[in-house]
Amino acid sequence: MRVLIEIIYLAAIGLGVPGPTVAKAGMVLSPPIMPGWDRFPIRDTLEKLWGCPVSLNNDAELGVLGEWAYGAGRGEQNLAYIKVGTGIGAGLFIDGQIYRGATGSAGEIGHMTIDENGPLCTCGNHGCLEAMAGGKAIAAKARQAISQNKRTELADIHPVESITAIEIAKAATRGDLVAQEILAEAGNQLGIAITSLVNLFNPNIVVVGGGVAQTGDLFLEPVRKVVLKRSLPAAAQAVRITTALLGKRSSCMGAVVQALSTVLHSIAT
Image 1 (cartoon, rainbow, N blue to C red):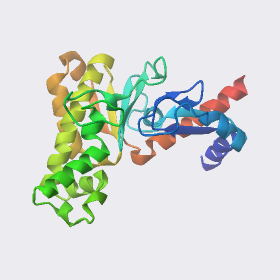
Image 2 (cartoon, helix red, strand yellow):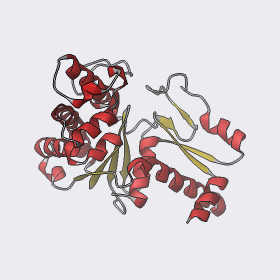
Image 3 (cartoon, helix red, strand yellow):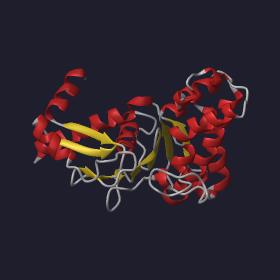
């Protein structure tokens, strides 16, 4: 297997980026957390630099591909992968194929409006899921709790501006109540967004990835409860919500699958 993967990487490279991608053009369009990269020819530039075919995908798209091929969604035909990091994105696998939409921006669940009067998002709108439940938003809630003198082990982290969502997740698994409340709130908000996805897309399984999701039920149980309460019964009863089996490797393994596909396609043609 190691030899095969090395050959794949030498023959082709799968690359993921955290923004709306136009796969055919090999570039990103107005990526909220990639300033300065709008319409830059990423694929063509790297193909010239590395001398081999490069495929460009959104990192959540690669995540759904990885989990479908080797992870929690293996063999499923209708699958959604939600990556919760600094940003929040979704990879959609519909009827056995990645769904990208007309311009490559399908799955941008992080910019679904949860509260129109909510905080400002990097995209310029207010109350987006990403601005309320993304990594930066989770960290901001911890800093707010500390400023209100709530009892939490997170107060021992200095400087307070260095607190990350991963540290909050770790504190939650150790029983820190404030950290658990922060994750539960983020899980509720993510559940609202996933409810819309479940009603529209009707997947068999929703896989949640990213460091925060590795806390398991502390984060996912609030998500499940909201989806069960708010989704249409027919859709809610069919969907399973679980943590990414591959953990941080979901997108990497998806890149391997994409690279292999590129190689096989070039051989066939």
